[in-house]
Every structure is written in C-alpha cells, then in structure tokens.
Amino acid sequence: MVDSPNGHPKRVMIVVAHPDDADFMAAGTLAMWARQGCEVSYVLCTSGDKGSSDPEVIPAELAATREREQRAAAAVVGARDVAFLRYPDGALQNTLELRRDLVREIRRFRPDVLLCQDPTNRFSDGYVNHPDHRAAGDAALDAVYPSARDYHAYPDLIEEGLMPHKTLEVYLGGSASNSTVWVDISDTIDVKVAALREHASQVGTDPARLATLESRIKERAAELGAPHALAYAEGFRYIHLR
Image (tube, rainbow, N blue to C red; front, side, top):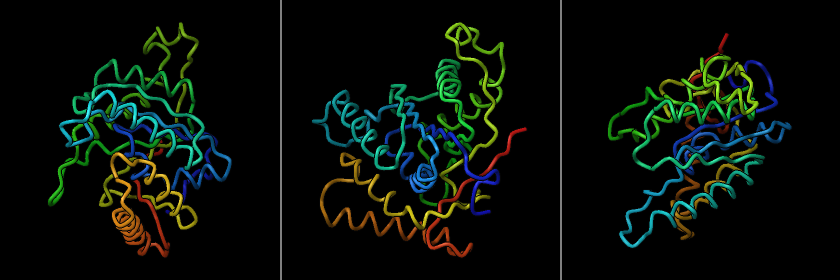
C-alpha cells in the first residue's frame, strides 16, 4: 500500500514522546495530508527537557525552547493544534494518568487516524530504542483502544463534556522492518526537512551539519520508497480497528 486504505482522513493526531519525534517519523505524511485539507494535531508526552549533553543547560529552559521549536515545526508541516502533556523526559511510563491525558486529547480532537511510535520496536543492530518512545506508543495504543471508545472509562472526562470517540486507523512508526504501508512523500520531502531544521537545539544551525541532515533524511526516504516505485516514502505498520 502507498496511501491510507480509507482515502484522505479529515483529522489526524500524532502522539509521540519528545519534540522532533513526530517530524523525524512522519512530517512528510502529515504535510501531505495537511495539503489535502486534513486537520493535523500533535500531542507531545514530554517537552524533551533532558535532550542535551551540555551540563550548563537548564532543563526547564531547554523544555521551553523545544516547545517553541516544535510549534514552529508543526506550523511548517501545516498542523493546527499542538498539545504538550509535560511529563518528565526520560521517565515516561504507560500509567493510567498518562492514558487518561491521551484519552482527553483524543476525545477533544476526535481523529480519524492516530499515529504513534511502535512500542514493539525495542532494539536492532547498533540501536536501542528510547524507553520513552516505547512508553508513549504503549500509552497511545491503550488510549485509542479501548479507553477513548468506552463510555465508562474515565468518567471524569464525561463530566468535562468529552464523549467517547472511536478512531478507526492507527499508524505505527519507527521500525521499517515492520512497515505494511508506505506513504508517498515525494511532494513533501522538502517540508519534512524544513520542519526538522526548526529543531535547532537538536540538529544545530551549522550549514554543513544541516546539509548532512538533509542528505540523510532524503537517502532514508529514498530507500523506503524504492521497492514501491516511490521517489521518497515514509513507512508505517498499519492497524484498521473494527
């Protein structure tokens, strides 16, 4: 497959652990859908306050910086909504509290499609997946099914006026070996690169470093797309909920 089996969704939500996760994983796909008139929402479980090796960096200031960067990147993609849950970076767990907060966002935004990180992607040769990524993916899946759907789950949300919502499609990102859907991002690969450039605290501002980033992003997208006759692609593991 090279596109959503149900055509163009009207509302899409992406749930990730840290600022920049969504843009590395799916900015091309999100930008493509935004161009088609889809409403796109970002939900960040943390604000990335541990995302620096500089001992002089103050975590609270870094979190504020990364939130600004994420809002700017989401605007480049065409997203209309960005929510920060502000759980501690590096200590994210799939708790009932996190699940409730994600259910709140799902019921508020009411997405047709939810994208999240694949919690089964633990490691590969030379790579160990961040535990926050796995926790965010687990919590997002538990939130979208069954909690967001079930009336009696989180009655406090009913009191807030947030009625149950059933999302029908889920895209898991972050593991090419598990992909079952490949989205053509040939027209939005440059948007993806531009969005990632907004995360200056992570990717830097040096022109040579940014050129290397662009080359790496395009090479990876070309590798994913080549078996499917696509110039550039993003891959996901697809779940159709019933």
